[in-house]
Amino acid sequence: MFSRIYRAASTGTLLVLALLGSMLSQGTEAHETEWPGQKLAAIFPKAKKFVQRSAVLTPAKSAAIEKELGTKLRAEDQKPVFYIPMNDKKKPMGLVLFIDVLGPRGVIDGAVGLDMKGKVVKVAVYNHNESDAVVADAFLNQFIGTDIDSTFNIGEDVTAVEGHEAASKAVALLPKKTLAMSYALFLKRKPKPKKAPHPEPPTPDIKDLGELMMLMLDAYLEVAAYFDTGEDKAKAVAAAEQLATYAKRISDFEPPENAEQTEAYAALHGTFVETLTQFAEALEKDGISDETRAQWETIEELVNQAHHRFSGKEIELEAY
Image (cartoon, rainbow, N blue to C red; front, side, top):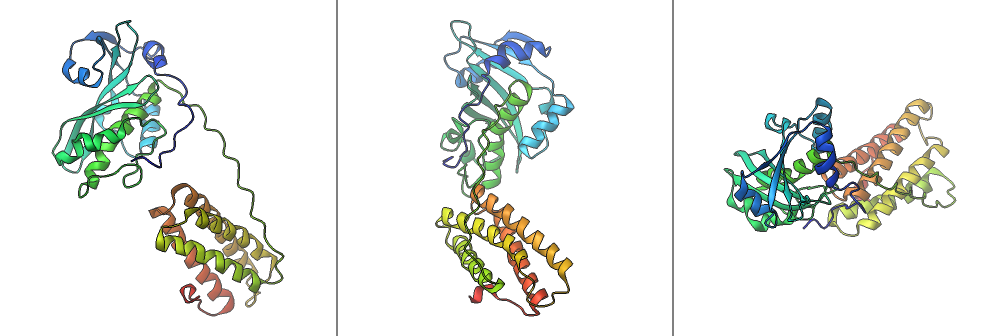
Protein backbone atom coordinates (compact mmCIF):
# COMPACT_ATOMS: atom_id res chain seq x y z
CA MET A 1 0.00 0.00 0.00
CA PHE A 2 1.16 3.43 -0.92
CA SER A 3 4.27 1.87 -2.42
CA ARG A 4 4.49 4.60 -5.04
CA ILE A 5 3.79 7.62 -2.90
CA TYR A 6 6.23 10.43 -3.48
CA ARG A 7 7.46 11.75 -0.13
CA ALA A 8 9.43 14.99 0.09
CA ALA A 9 12.45 15.01 2.39
CA SER A 10 10.64 17.39 4.72
CA THR A 11 7.15 18.85 4.82
CA GLY A 12 8.74 22.02 6.11
CA THR A 13 6.89 24.09 8.68
CA LEU A 14 5.58 22.13 11.67
CA LEU A 15 1.95 22.26 12.65
CA VAL A 16 2.95 24.14 15.77
CA LEU A 17 3.00 27.27 13.61
CA ALA A 18 -0.63 26.68 12.83
CA LEU A 19 -1.59 25.91 16.37
CA LEU A 20 0.27 28.65 18.22
CA GLY A 21 0.67 31.40 15.65
CA SER A 22 -1.15 31.43 12.36
CA MET A 23 -4.59 30.62 13.73
CA LEU A 24 -4.50 33.43 16.25
CA SER A 25 -3.12 35.93 13.78
CA GLN A 26 -5.97 35.14 11.41
CA GLY A 27 -8.54 35.98 14.07
CA THR A 28 -9.68 32.41 14.67
CA GLU A 29 -11.67 31.67 17.79
CA ALA A 30 -10.24 29.38 20.47
CA HIS A 31 -11.58 27.75 23.60
CA GLU A 32 -11.27 24.51 25.52
CA THR A 33 -13.92 21.95 24.77
CA GLU A 34 -15.31 18.75 26.16
CA TRP A 35 -17.17 17.91 22.93
CA PRO A 36 -16.96 15.60 21.06
CA GLY A 37 -14.54 14.23 23.61
CA GLN A 38 -15.03 10.52 23.01
CA LYS A 39 -14.27 10.72 19.29
CA LEU A 40 -11.32 13.03 19.88
CA ALA A 41 -9.86 10.78 22.56
CA ALA A 42 -10.02 7.84 20.15
CA ILE A 43 -7.78 9.75 17.75
CA PHE A 44 -5.37 11.20 20.35
CA PRO A 45 -5.73 8.94 23.42
CA LYS A 46 -2.76 10.57 25.21
CA ALA A 47 -4.19 14.08 25.00
CA LYS A 48 -5.13 15.72 28.32
CA LYS A 49 -7.50 18.21 26.73
CA PHE A 50 -8.50 19.67 23.37
CA VAL A 51 -8.62 23.29 22.26
CA GLN A 52 -11.16 24.18 19.60
CA ARG A 53 -10.22 26.70 16.90
CA SER A 54 -12.45 27.93 14.10
CA ALA A 55 -11.33 29.31 10.74
CA VAL A 56 -12.96 30.74 7.62
CA LEU A 57 -11.82 30.00 4.09
CA THR A 58 -11.37 32.99 1.81
CA PRO A 59 -12.33 32.58 -1.87
CA ALA A 60 -8.64 32.46 -2.77
CA LYS A 61 -7.90 29.71 -0.27
CA SER A 62 -10.98 27.75 -1.36
CA ALA A 63 -9.78 27.94 -4.96
CA ALA A 64 -6.29 26.75 -3.95
CA ILE A 65 -7.74 23.80 -2.03
CA GLU A 66 -10.06 22.84 -4.89
CA LYS A 67 -7.12 22.91 -7.28
CA GLU A 68 -5.17 20.63 -4.93
CA LEU A 69 -8.08 18.21 -4.58
CA GLY A 70 -9.32 18.30 -8.16
CA THR A 71 -12.89 18.67 -6.88
CA LYS A 72 -15.21 21.31 -5.45
CA LEU A 73 -15.46 21.90 -1.71
CA ARG A 74 -18.77 21.39 0.04
CA ALA A 75 -20.59 24.30 1.67
CA GLU A 76 -19.85 22.69 5.05
CA ASP A 77 -16.10 22.99 4.37
CA GLN A 78 -16.07 26.78 4.28
CA LYS A 79 -15.92 27.24 8.08
CA PRO A 80 -13.74 24.40 9.39
CA VAL A 81 -13.37 23.78 13.11
CA PHE A 82 -10.07 22.31 14.28
CA TYR A 83 -9.47 20.53 17.60
CA ILE A 84 -5.97 20.78 19.04
CA PRO A 85 -4.91 17.94 21.36
CA MET A 86 -2.71 19.15 24.25
CA ASN A 87 -0.36 16.92 26.23
CA ASP A 88 0.33 16.99 29.97
CA LYS A 89 2.87 19.78 29.42
CA LYS A 90 0.25 21.91 27.65
CA LYS A 91 1.98 21.44 24.31
CA PRO A 92 0.04 20.77 21.10
CA MET A 93 0.27 17.26 19.68
CA GLY A 94 -1.31 17.89 16.29
CA LEU A 95 -4.85 18.58 15.14
CA VAL A 96 -8.17 16.89 14.40
CA LEU A 97 -10.64 18.00 11.75
CA PHE A 98 -14.18 16.62 11.58
CA ILE A 99 -14.99 16.55 7.89
CA ASP A 100 -17.34 14.93 5.41
CA VAL A 101 -17.27 13.99 1.73
CA LEU A 102 -19.88 12.89 -0.77
CA GLY A 103 -19.80 9.18 -1.58
CA PRO A 104 -21.78 7.25 -4.19
CA ARG A 105 -24.57 6.59 -1.65
CA GLY A 106 -24.55 9.89 0.18
CA VAL A 107 -22.52 11.83 2.72
CA ILE A 108 -19.62 10.09 4.47
CA ASP A 109 -18.99 11.72 7.86
CA GLY A 110 -15.60 11.30 9.51
CA ALA A 111 -12.54 12.84 11.12
CA VAL A 112 -8.79 12.93 10.46
CA GLY A 113 -5.93 13.45 12.91
CA LEU A 114 -2.56 14.91 11.91
CA ASP A 115 0.58 14.93 14.03
CA MET A 116 2.99 17.85 14.47
CA LYS A 117 4.84 16.92 11.28
CA GLY A 118 1.70 17.02 9.19
CA LYS A 119 1.34 13.25 8.87
CA VAL A 120 -1.95 11.38 9.23
CA VAL A 121 -2.23 9.45 12.50
CA LYS A 122 -5.85 8.36 12.23
CA VAL A 123 -8.80 8.35 9.83
CA ALA A 124 -12.19 7.61 11.37
CA VAL A 125 -15.61 7.28 9.70
CA TYR A 126 -18.82 7.64 11.70
CA ASN A 127 -21.93 7.94 9.54
CA HIS A 128 -22.17 6.52 6.02
CA ASN A 129 -24.32 4.45 3.66
CA GLU A 130 -21.43 2.60 2.01
CA SER A 131 -20.09 -0.91 2.51
CA ASP A 132 -18.65 -1.46 5.98
CA ALA A 133 -15.48 -2.66 4.28
CA VAL A 134 -14.52 0.92 3.28
CA VAL A 135 -14.62 2.06 6.93
CA ALA A 136 -12.88 -0.97 8.42
CA ASP A 137 -9.40 -0.61 9.90
CA ALA A 138 -8.00 -2.85 7.15
CA PHE A 139 -8.83 -0.11 4.66
CA LEU A 140 -8.44 3.04 6.77
CA ASN A 141 -5.07 2.13 8.30
CA GLN A 142 -3.34 2.42 4.94
CA PHE A 143 -3.68 6.21 5.22
CA ILE A 144 -1.59 6.38 8.41
CA GLY A 145 1.69 8.13 7.70
CA THR A 146 0.50 9.88 4.55
CA ASP A 147 1.17 13.59 4.15
CA ILE A 148 0.61 16.58 1.89
CA ASP A 149 2.79 15.05 -0.83
CA SER A 150 0.85 11.78 -0.92
CA THR A 151 -1.24 11.31 -4.06
CA PHE A 152 -4.06 9.02 -2.82
CA ASN A 153 -4.53 7.49 -6.29
CA ILE A 154 -6.99 4.60 -6.20
CA GLY A 155 -5.51 1.41 -7.64
CA GLU A 156 -1.97 2.77 -7.35
CA ASP A 157 -1.30 4.31 -3.94
CA VAL A 158 -4.58 3.24 -2.36
CA THR A 159 -5.73 -0.35 -2.42
CA ALA A 160 -9.48 -0.04 -3.01
CA VAL A 161 -12.10 -2.35 -1.57
CA GLU A 162 -13.01 -4.66 -4.44
CA GLY A 163 -16.37 -3.76 -5.90
CA HIS A 164 -16.45 -0.47 -3.99
CA GLU A 165 -13.87 1.60 -5.86
CA ALA A 166 -16.01 4.77 -5.93
CA ALA A 167 -16.64 4.60 -2.18
CA SER A 168 -12.94 3.89 -1.58
CA LYS A 169 -12.04 6.99 -3.58
CA ALA A 170 -14.51 9.07 -1.56
CA VAL A 171 -13.09 7.90 1.77
CA ALA A 172 -9.55 8.62 0.56
CA LEU A 173 -10.68 12.21 0.06
CA LEU A 174 -11.09 12.60 3.86
CA PRO A 175 -7.34 12.69 4.64
CA LYS A 176 -6.53 14.41 1.35
CA LYS A 177 -8.99 17.22 2.06
CA THR A 178 -7.82 17.59 5.67
CA LEU A 179 -4.20 17.95 4.54
CA ALA A 180 -5.06 20.39 1.76
CA MET A 181 -7.16 22.57 4.08
CA SER A 182 -4.55 22.56 6.85
CA TYR A 183 -1.77 23.64 4.50
CA ALA A 184 -3.88 26.23 2.70
CA LEU A 185 -4.85 27.81 6.03
CA PHE A 186 -1.75 27.56 8.17
CA LEU A 187 1.28 25.89 6.65
CA LYS A 188 3.78 26.50 3.89
CA ARG A 189 5.38 23.85 1.78
CA LYS A 190 9.06 23.93 1.14
CA PRO A 191 9.72 24.00 -2.59
CA LYS A 192 10.58 20.59 -3.93
CA PRO A 193 14.16 20.29 -5.16
CA LYS A 194 14.26 20.73 -8.88
CA LYS A 195 14.84 17.53 -10.71
CA ALA A 196 17.89 17.60 -12.91
CA PRO A 197 16.84 17.33 -16.55
CA HIS A 198 17.65 14.10 -18.33
CA PRO A 199 20.54 14.49 -20.75
CA GLU A 200 19.36 13.71 -24.24
CA PRO A 201 20.32 10.17 -25.25
CA PRO A 202 23.15 10.05 -27.78
CA THR A 203 22.06 9.52 -31.37
CA PRO A 204 24.12 7.67 -33.94
CA ASP A 205 25.23 9.17 -37.21
CA ILE A 206 22.12 8.83 -39.35
CA LYS A 207 22.48 9.01 -43.12
CA ASP A 208 18.88 9.23 -44.30
CA LEU A 209 15.28 9.32 -43.19
CA GLY A 210 14.80 5.61 -43.79
CA GLU A 211 17.56 4.74 -41.31
CA LEU A 212 16.04 7.14 -38.77
CA MET A 213 12.62 5.54 -39.18
CA MET A 214 14.03 2.09 -38.46
CA LEU A 215 15.65 3.34 -35.25
CA MET A 216 12.35 4.93 -34.23
CA LEU A 217 10.56 1.67 -34.97
CA ASP A 218 12.85 -0.22 -32.57
CA ALA A 219 12.10 2.31 -29.81
CA TYR A 220 8.39 2.22 -30.64
CA LEU A 221 8.28 -1.55 -30.20
CA GLU A 222 9.95 -1.28 -26.77
CA VAL A 223 7.20 1.07 -25.55
CA ALA A 224 4.46 -1.03 -27.16
CA ALA A 225 5.77 -4.11 -25.36
CA TYR A 226 5.57 -2.28 -22.04
CA PHE A 227 1.91 -1.43 -22.61
CA ASP A 228 1.24 -5.07 -23.53
CA THR A 229 3.04 -6.68 -20.57
CA GLY A 230 3.39 -3.94 -17.92
CA GLU A 231 7.00 -5.06 -17.45
CA ASP A 232 10.31 -3.12 -17.50
CA LYS A 233 9.09 0.45 -17.07
CA ALA A 234 12.63 1.86 -17.02
CA LYS A 235 13.39 0.35 -20.42
CA ALA A 236 10.15 1.76 -21.82
CA VAL A 237 10.86 5.24 -20.44
CA ALA A 238 14.34 5.17 -22.02
CA ALA A 239 12.79 4.13 -25.33
CA ALA A 240 10.20 6.93 -25.12
CA GLU A 241 12.96 9.47 -24.47
CA GLN A 242 14.90 8.05 -27.42
CA LEU A 243 11.80 8.38 -29.60
CA ALA A 244 11.48 12.06 -28.66
CA THR A 245 15.16 12.60 -29.49
CA TYR A 246 14.86 10.80 -32.83
CA ALA A 247 11.73 12.78 -33.67
CA LYS A 248 13.68 16.03 -33.44
CA ARG A 249 16.04 14.70 -36.11
CA ILE A 250 13.24 14.26 -38.64
CA SER A 251 13.54 17.92 -39.58
CA ASP A 252 17.09 17.19 -40.79
CA PHE A 253 15.58 15.40 -43.80
CA GLU A 254 13.13 16.40 -46.48
CA PRO A 255 9.84 14.53 -46.83
CA PRO A 256 10.42 11.59 -49.20
CA GLU A 257 7.29 12.48 -51.18
CA ASN A 258 4.89 15.42 -51.39
CA ALA A 259 7.78 17.69 -50.42
CA GLU A 260 5.88 20.76 -51.55
CA GLN A 261 3.81 20.47 -48.36
CA THR A 262 6.71 21.71 -46.22
CA GLU A 263 4.56 23.97 -44.03
CA ALA A 264 2.18 21.17 -43.12
CA TYR A 265 5.11 18.84 -42.69
CA ALA A 266 6.79 21.22 -40.22
CA ALA A 267 3.56 21.72 -38.25
CA LEU A 268 2.97 17.99 -37.96
CA HIS A 269 6.59 17.44 -36.98
CA GLY A 270 6.33 20.03 -34.19
CA THR A 271 3.19 18.39 -32.80
CA PHE A 272 4.85 14.97 -32.95
CA VAL A 273 7.97 16.09 -31.05
CA GLU A 274 5.94 17.91 -28.38
CA THR A 275 3.59 14.95 -27.87
CA LEU A 276 6.48 12.49 -27.58
CA THR A 277 8.31 14.71 -25.08
CA GLN A 278 5.22 15.05 -22.88
CA PHE A 279 4.57 11.32 -23.18
CA ALA A 280 8.10 10.40 -22.03
CA GLU A 281 7.73 12.66 -18.98
CA ALA A 282 4.30 11.26 -18.08
CA LEU A 283 5.46 7.67 -18.59
CA GLU A 284 8.36 8.17 -16.17
CA LYS A 285 6.07 9.77 -13.58
CA ASP A 286 2.94 7.60 -13.81
CA GLY A 287 3.83 4.49 -15.79
CA ILE A 288 0.77 2.95 -17.43
CA SER A 289 -2.21 5.19 -16.78
CA ASP A 290 -5.27 6.50 -18.60
CA GLU A 291 -3.26 9.59 -19.53
CA THR A 292 -0.25 7.76 -20.95
CA ARG A 293 -2.47 5.31 -22.84
CA ALA A 294 -4.30 8.25 -24.43
CA GLN A 295 -0.98 9.92 -25.28
CA TRP A 296 0.30 6.71 -26.85
CA GLU A 297 -2.83 6.40 -28.99
CA THR A 298 -2.30 9.99 -30.14
CA ILE A 299 1.31 9.19 -31.06
CA GLU A 300 0.20 6.19 -33.12
CA GLU A 301 -2.36 8.35 -34.91
CA LEU A 302 0.29 10.96 -35.67
CA VAL A 303 2.63 8.30 -37.08
CA ASN A 304 -0.08 7.00 -39.40
CA GLN A 305 -1.15 10.51 -40.36
CA ALA A 306 2.37 11.59 -41.26
CA HIS A 307 3.18 8.43 -43.19
CA HIS A 308 -0.03 8.55 -45.20
CA ARG A 309 0.19 12.27 -45.93
CA PHE A 310 3.78 12.35 -47.12
CA SER A 311 4.15 8.95 -48.75
CA GLY A 312 0.60 8.39 -49.94
CA LYS A 313 0.54 4.96 -48.26
CA GLU A 314 -0.97 3.53 -45.09
CA ILE A 315 1.39 2.16 -42.45
CA GLU A 316 0.47 -0.70 -40.16
CA LEU A 317 2.83 -0.44 -37.18
CA GLU A 318 1.71 -3.74 -35.68
CA ALA A 319 2.82 -5.50 -38.86
CA TYR A 320 6.45 -4.90 -37.98
